[in-house]
Image 1: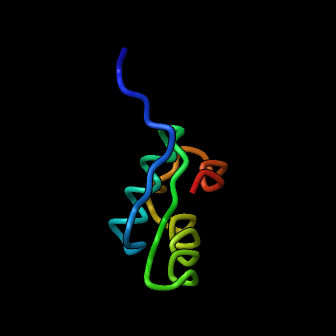
Image 2: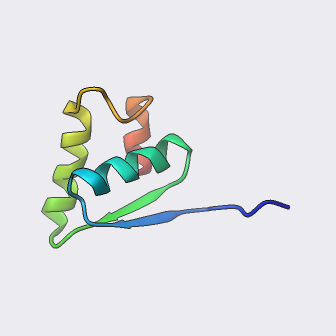
Length: 65
């Protein structure tokens, strides 16, 4: 049986960390995004919504992060 990933964590909510979290969310994997402060991690979600091209296939994927 192939391995199953039930959740993931990404440390660092900068450009790369936020994009990694988006790719995991696109695969249907719930992601916890960590940064120095909770505000910094929350700001990453807003940046994902404005990014061009959008890193999330569907905007509903933000709920997994």
